[in-house]
Amino acid sequence: MAVPLVIDSLDFACNAEVRRGKIAIARFQRLQDYLANNSGELEYAVTGALDANGRPVLRVDIQGVVSLQCQRCLEELEHVLDIHTELLLAQNEQELQSLDEDELVDCILAQPEMDVLLLIEDEIILALPVSPRHEQDECMPGGREDGKATREASPFAALAALKKTH
Ligand SMILES: [Zn+2]
Image (tube, rainbow, N blue to C red):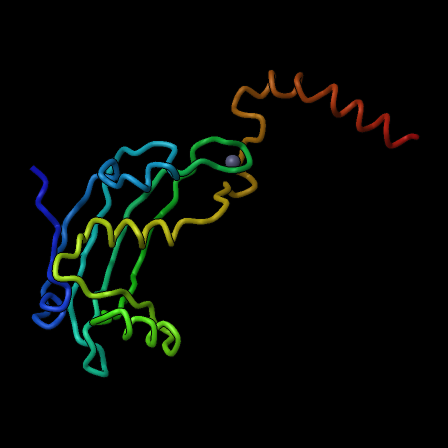
């Protein structure tokens, strides 16, 4: 059975607790929409601490590889995650609003039952590229069946050439 990943976020920060482990990528429900396949797992660590000003924070570290779909050739694209975020814990909505306005930090509302899995998933989704693409020399526009792709593309190439002359 999977270990429940629920923390009392303020206590967790004030007691400098740490949770670390591995999570199967298939467990992140919202993340599935972004993935070409969901095999494998990610390493995570959530660390409670007080920042330099004595305010409670959660540090979130996530490492691993997710499989996205290249927006140019539609083939799989391995994307390396190496996320290190510090989230300031606001103790109520009012504090959250003022921190959001004033600070150059990410801020979340402290919850007595915070689901670490959702927190990690949020950070992963925020870190994903908007339009993932292979490097130019690794990309395969038209797919891997090169011969077929070339034949299909040729009428359009001919048409384009024709248009240019007129
Ligand atoms: Zn590509």
